[in-house]
Image (cartoon, rainbow, N blue to C red):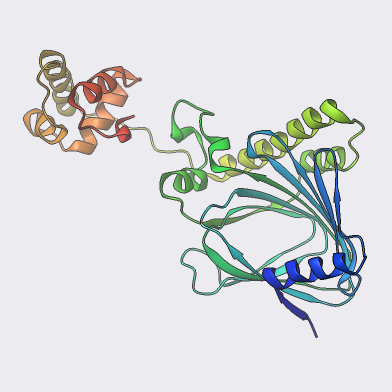
Amino acid sequence: MAIALTDTDLHNLLVQTHEQGEPVYQPTDLGYQLKMPQQIGQGGDCTLQLRRGLTIDIRNIQLQQALALTNHHKETFPIVAKFYLSGGSRVKTPHVPGIEADYEEIAGHNYLYHLPDLTETEEWRSDQPIQVVMISANVDYFQGLSTTDDALPSPLQHMMQDTRRFHKSLGKITPAMAQVLQQILGCPYQGSAQHLYLESKASELLALQIACLEADTPAPKPFKLNASDLERVQYAREIVHQRLCDPLSLTDLARQAGLNECTLKRGFRHLLQQAFVLSSYWISSQVLSASWV
């Protein structure tokens, strides 16, 4: 039978274990090590805190018996890249739109997720050791990577736009990922060199996962303007230039050009490649949203 704990229960157990003289918490140069109480199992977690909100968590545990841990995720939650080297878990997340109510994470596979503001129960078996590497990054870590959000995979676009939750299985750990994971586990450096080395390897794992996402994301269909719409977009551009000091609203501009707002915006992007005209227009009118670009 599995031991059932909440995250609060586990915290209280760690405090109690520490007060009884069993070493639980050990600070390190880059973070800390957390040892699992003996009644739960052997081993524990190593947390490495890097710059810009980047964190590496390395879990090595052999449970005494199965464990079911219920976690309450806060509204502020990082993007997590998870790599199961051994062991696995079953995750139950009932009544959460967009997330499977019951799924498994298995050895040799990797996952990417963003799961704020929910409660989940993760169940681990005790018949095999658990070794997991997790890379956590704040949402803003991914911002500024490109001049346009369109360059990011669609799950990250959705998350950045309105904090949608997602849990994405990216299949088996690739040879490139496996090599970087072993480099993290066997980091040969100390001090500042260790910090920079681990930071680069954590970023490399995120890059490899994003590459997998991009490979699975269908290429958008090219936007084409017919001759009539092209003339109307060019006419709208002339209106923008003529009325910089007294700009029309987006709705009025589209109506005067004889286009809907979506076609007008996409037409400007197609025609000009960059939204310099739109940016000037937005600043002068103070009514157009950042979604123009």
